[in-house]
Image 1 (tube, rainbow, N blue to C red):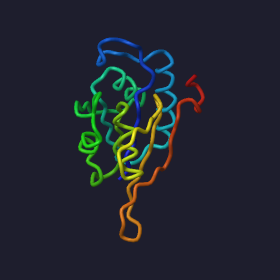
Image 2: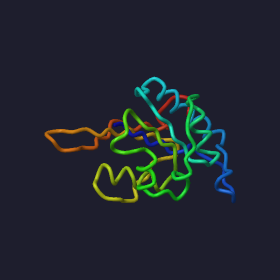
Image 3: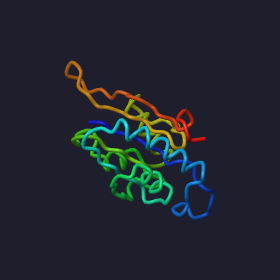
Image 4: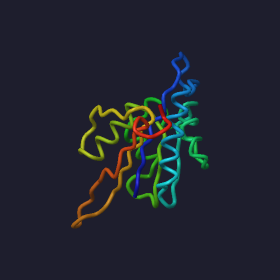
Length: 154
């Protein structure tokens, strides 16, 4: 199974956390990562986004259908994210569009075996793969895509 973790792009400040929209820079970040992702889309991709405006706008940059899942909203814990993704047994690939600190905590749990405060930059995508080697399950970091290194995201 492939699990893609995409943190929402840069968003406006505001009191209503669910209503904060992407900034102009955030829109460029989302479009740049979406452009890269469309060129590398895994087969049978299921896209799940947090219900916040900024995560929905980030997901919309892909121009593909996606689900809204409250469990992966702000404050989501790694267990919530894993349940929403169906990790590790879901077929195909799942893209979660969500928030810090949950996404970083999930990445650290899957890659290092314990929850730590890892930071995923705004707009960045981490692509993880679960595989079996010599009878043992492994989680492998396939790639990290940062909007800062893609053309058109500045």
